[in-house]
Length: 139
Image (cartoon, rainbow, N blue to C red; front, side, top):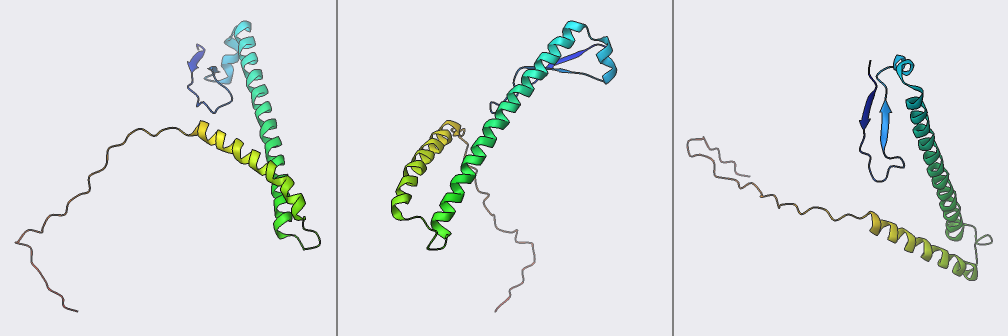
């Protein structure tokens, strides 16, 4: 059986891109040349590396945001003796402002202009034909 090679279009958000070898069955691995196996292994290793880096970045971001949320909850909901005083809160304001600015930049980068869509015409209701029976109900 021949080796099936196909190109897959991936979304821009995807960490991996390019061409992927697709095997029709595991018995095809015996029929692949050593160079093709090396190429396949290199592609898979690079994908694993990219995904590992992405997971690491995402985990770091999650930990940072979790810590920040915990601080903000403590600021707002803690007992009076444990709450931060206003001077400490001003330190968090700068951090929050930079985070909001970074998120706004990301949102603007991700924001795509939707294609102009035609306005749907509302269906107009026509009068019922005169031959239909009519029943008047008075309340």
